[in-house]
Image 1 (cartoon, rainbow, N blue to C red):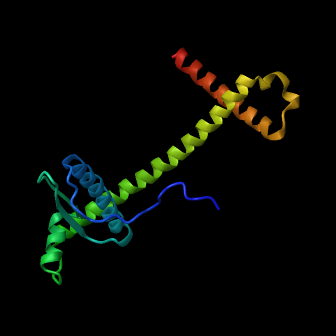
Image 2: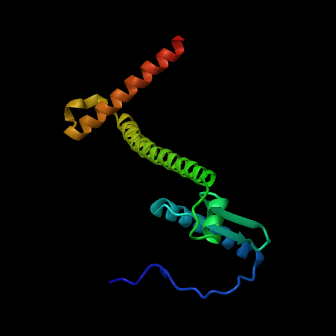
Image 3: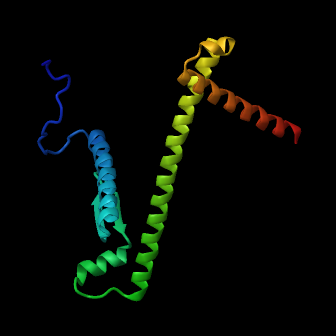
Length: 167
């Protein structure tokens, strides 16, 4: 067995970072990671959460879900029922977050489809450069399928261009 190529994950000692630029950069990265983890907690467990931070330059940062009022009321008065207004606002915020998550999932699917289409188009471009159309009888089944896909894409693009030019 060969030796490790990297040092891997190693435990670092927790101490103040003396370099101000490095300290602020680390804070920014960790703040974003903390917000991301808090967002995942909210999404997975349907909880209310609040985070208040102060940066090395004394800039205040916060993350609250669903609202500051909802988190503060739950924290200060743990057994009290939230007001109707706070419940309504919290529900609206949760609905908006769910809509955004749905859109994000849809964009991810579109990105995957576009990536696959790009791969197919790149393969078609390679086929065109090789000159496969000159000797179709020698193509294997999978190569013929790729060639057919390229021809279909080329046909669609030409029809689209003709329509846009004709207008």
